[in-house]
Image (tube, rainbow, N blue to C red; front, top):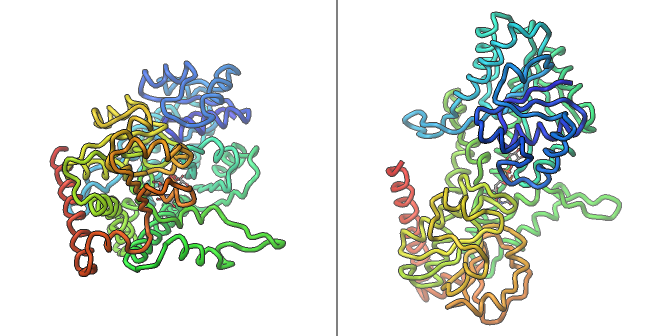
Length: 492
Ligand code: UGA
């Protein structure tokens, strides 16, 4: 098939490179000339394992091309995939900043609609961008019809959500667990079925709105699991002798979560979202949960569960701050190594990274931060405003630190030589925000603070009046975080 893809972000470019590898002719379009030139040179504008190999292969074979010119990219094309961003923009007064910005989507639909007039063949338009239920018909269909002068039926319409994870996007695309085809009619859906013929997985044909909702439902479920685990971690921390990892292990053994097949217990991957940590971030989960809340509010459907999921998540950085402050007595004048700045391991994406919230809160408290991430370049860190805080190596970040805080599960942190690293620290305090060093034997001198384990910290700091003291120190950490968030908002 000849496929046009509008937008060369994560979704568009990974989709384009992977579809070209399966024999389709793919033409990617982007408004940024700089980005197009980079891709033409075989370089991905972001870090994604395996992507550059596929790009180079596709470009060399001629099956993949990139342009800023949409009309050229649509000549003789069977199908257009819209994969432009739908970032959050300032929204309603009671849910500020949660409304998705649809301007890129409208522009893409308009430009495709104009080309439909002269295309001279049946063409299907499929939305891959994550959009609030109703948007594909209410916005995309309407704009396409207005710009083309045609009616739905003369062209096809689908909504085809993506389920790619950053860091494993290429692998996820090439080995999909499902391909959800939201179709306006069977003829439109048949085109997507043809497109995805090389992929062997279930391909449910559903309504357009059901496809839109399936995407949100998937990310909302992940966020619920994460916040549940984190809330449980808090309860374990308040319970002397309790460890969230042991409690979770007991939970996993429920055969409904980990069935035994022929005597072997299967541990489904979903269990990885039932691990306590510093909370979720990235360009998807927080944005999508918030968008679903806005949709609920607009539709008159309260979403107290999702509201609580976000509140629990927003409180996670404060938890780390509390641990650091309690372990060190004070943060003012202390040097803290922040290990990991991306929103998770295996990516250089800093959007909505909980590590950055921790960094700002530490600095507000008067600490000096030395940050490092094995995947994030110094330039990217600088663009994110880290400037002097960023270090080029793990060693230089940890050197002279009063405490180190691990914020991503990067294997480099688990496999590091902690005997050597901790000997270079002023005080060997390790705060493990992702519980990655739980099973590593650390030097005896290291004071190790994982997430969700007993009340050791509060006891160390608070002595006899533990309960009241714990509440006070936590409230204090929340106050810092709230004032940091407010300052950041005011600065925008
Ligand atoms: C997520 C979904 O997993 C994909 O299926 C979806 O396609 C994608 O969003 C999207 O909508 O485009 P991604 O944002 O790459 O993918 O990240 P995940 O690997 O799911 O992690 C999300 C966040 O949850 C990260 O901040 C991660 O550190 C955090 N997390 C994950 C936890 O805090 N605890 C866990 O146990 C697991």
